[in-house]
Image (cartoon, rainbow, N blue to C red):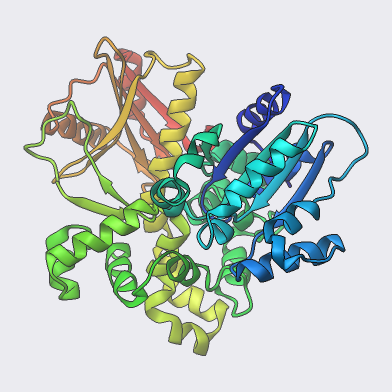
Length: 451
């Protein structure tokens, strides 16, 4: 089921309506929905779709010609490729040429771009060329050096972000908000992962059936992500394993892995470039005296789940099977995992409210603060330095007035002076805290079920 992407569809439609030939590079992680987006956009247009495979140039063109029912001309290799193009649809108008995983061609031979330009110059109609790539690092770091002057021919580079939590709610219409939060914590905004889950069964049963089962698509997805993106998988997996288990400072990783700090820094930098790991920066107007510095965490939610719950105990999983393994090693620790990712849902929710003008301030800066005694999950500030601090709780069944006072002490640690304090929680709020909100108008209590 295709959900969301209204902004992206509008962007593609705008390019399509221009009376010219355009080349667009659309890129993002595998599974984020790039191909689904483009095919949905092109559905009622004259388009041609080709998925480039990681093979030799000759075989790539041979495959393309075979798919089109044409013969390959080895003396004019890429000419054969473009001659094989047969657009779907009989209507007039701009053509849409889609080359999926185009880096599999460009990495080997940049002259493909030259042949493409010659092709678009030779046809009468304007063409919208859409290059799709799952290799973020190549597009951002390797493409321009590879193709040189032809990079100027590109009309744009569009990085497709994961879908938002609101899209997850739309996709899983059979789930309530709490269950959608669980799914989003596990799978992130990756629609190809969502398609493996069913909202006709519980999230817990989906974990057993769609992740832990030996034949499940997602069972080895964590290992695939790392092996496809990076070399020296043993080193990266070692670092990811310890990161997933809470060792998130450089010195902690040095002690646990035995690798030098310099080596760890290089490998983390590589993972950050591929958006698998992120460095946590505290809100820039906050005090750093009581902040924890140099914190890293796994950015990809499913990769985090894989290294937390599967990687270190995979032999047990093989021996015990999904149901028993879930009860033994997953069930009692999931709330800790959801707690870590609940902050992301809350940040998205508050940012959306800000955009809709439903917060007391129009947030221009949004971040977090990671402290030695606890964290401020969301910090929002407008151009006049008006500030909202928000605290997000998944695990607590009851948020008390004492909790609120502790939250205020964290803002003092950060030397942030909030104009408004928000608490977003899955649990309930006690009566003294409710009573306080009647006396003080800058405290807002929000139940997770209402997000």
